Length: 243
Image 1 (tube, rainbow, N blue to C red):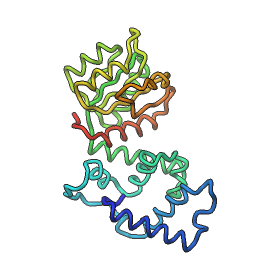
Image 2: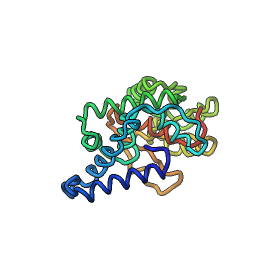
Image 3: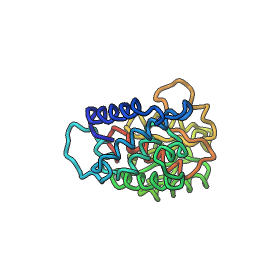
Image 4: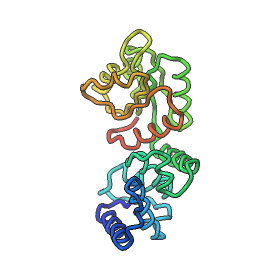
């Protein structure tokens, strides 16, 4: 939110001081966590400059993801961080921001659009079900990414990556010829650094204890907004080079 730990800590102190002065600001134990975040954001938004879009800043001390965060408009950035980093549901995040869930989803869509403007990349879809492959590819295109190929097997996926290095991989686990999308991804990651999202009906098959462990997993059937949100997160927080 702030771009520096020192500044962030100061806002946390102010929020806690307000809570000590008025414990009713966090009314119930079950609502303690969202109430604390709502209190922090109340303090944060009481400073007018924090409600304004941040101009680009050339600060070598900031990580690339922090630079990208600063470029997102304030409320969209808050919605994105609450769901992507703090793991609030859309309903909980809406209550923290004191908006309805429809508005919250609009803010997340706006954050995704602004992220795409900064991080548009190429994508490979590894999926053997044609309708799902088409749907995922179209969602990626709507987000501004270029789909360089759709692979139905392990060998097809590896061949596409050898020809065109993608900036994102979206993969199923069970593929058309009985091969494994997870094994295809492992082979791909041995040659390039790329964020990977698994969309699968068999999430338990990812619990193998093997490395690399998947970070982003969606279960089928999926919701389009979940795919859009996860794509934005995966690309946004990836630390390696993007294609």
